[in-house]
Structure formats: C-alpha cells, structure tokens
Amino acid sequence: MKKFKIKSGDTVKVIAGDHKGSEGKVLQILKDKDRVVVEGVNMVSKHTKPSAANPQGGIVKKEAPLHISNVALTENGEAVRIGYKVEGDKKVRVSKKSDKAI
Image (cartoon, rainbow, N blue to C red; front, top):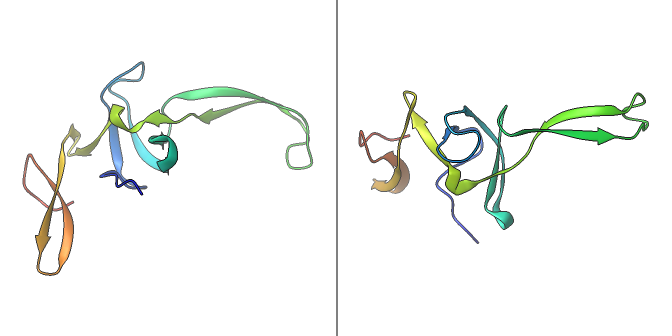
C-alpha cells in the first residue's frame, strides 16, 4: 500500500501544469492512480443524461483528478515540503521549512 504525505482535508497548492498557482482543499485521494481531487481546481464539463436523480440532465461541472506530484501542501499560503518526526510515541507530519507540526 502506498503512503502519501498529503491527506484528505489538507489545503494544497498546484505547483505544475495548467492550473499552476491554484489552491484548494483535497476532497479525495485516489491511491491506486496516484491522484488527488482538489476543490475548485481542474474543473471539467460532463454531459449527463436525464435520470431519476437528475431529471433535467445537461452539463455538470465537476473536479477532475490531478497527479499527486503536481500539488504541494501549503502553510501560510506557501508551498512546503513535508517530513515526519517521532514525538513521544506518535509519528507526526512536519513542515521542512518551519519545522512545525502540521
């Protein structure tokens, strides 16, 4: 099983690609494909047929996944790298820039 330093609910910044500079909250992590879904970033239009859940049908805007290497965790609006430290009997994520627990 893969281990990622980014978790659901973290605020991340896109550091590469078409949406470089955009920020948002991680909604979902797709571990098998090494991708993350970020709120409000990489929006795509999906055409939907009418159904019981959506009787109108039409065009729906939704977030598409980004590769996890194209996002970085943010701390005070800046992209930071993440490391781990053992404090007592717990392993915590730590910002490499400020050496503070996240």
